[in-house]
Picture 1 (cartoon, rainbow, N blue to C red):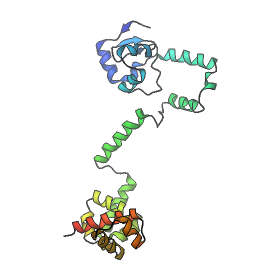
Picture 2 (picture 1 turned 135 degrees about the horizontal axis):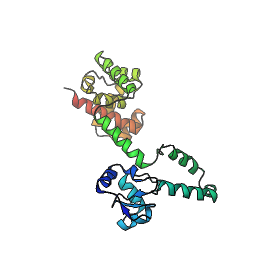
Picture 3 (picture 1 turned 180 degrees about the horizontal axis):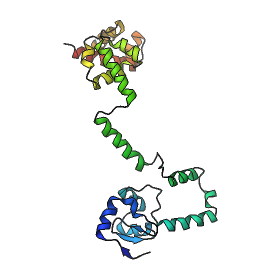
Length: 227
């Protein structure tokens, strides 16, 4: 253990570049700036477990938080004692992956930032190229005057998926004006307005209760949106 500390300037830098705190001959504590060869024992003095420390600063759960030379020595000792034979079969594959710099996809440390970045891109209107082509096809079919059933057959989307996507494209109101409900749809709407439950309607017309419930909600909202 080295009883030294880094300068205040370097300490502020390492707090924003936490990976550089782990160096060849020592590792720096990001809580106080002290220098050690191995950090886990010191972290307890700050009232943190090693996992809490890793989560607070962004380290992966498998990061040893020791100096690189110390880690190599421990690895040689473990190989000499044949400890890998006692580990799980997948541990070697994970270790090789981590050594190549490819984090495991199931780790929250790598998955959550990617997920949040994807949400931000979608909020800004980003769409994959394949979905952009489908959106253009939907716009074209709506401009050509096709009804919901025809668009559903051409695109392979269910009516529920089609309705959701057209709402996102702000084309739903134009489609509702051309929507002509089928005879079974009119019967569902009539029985629904008479006060029957979805299970009772399904027995009368031969549909699943969930389908009846979805179709009834769609038809009711369509009739409310029509002028």
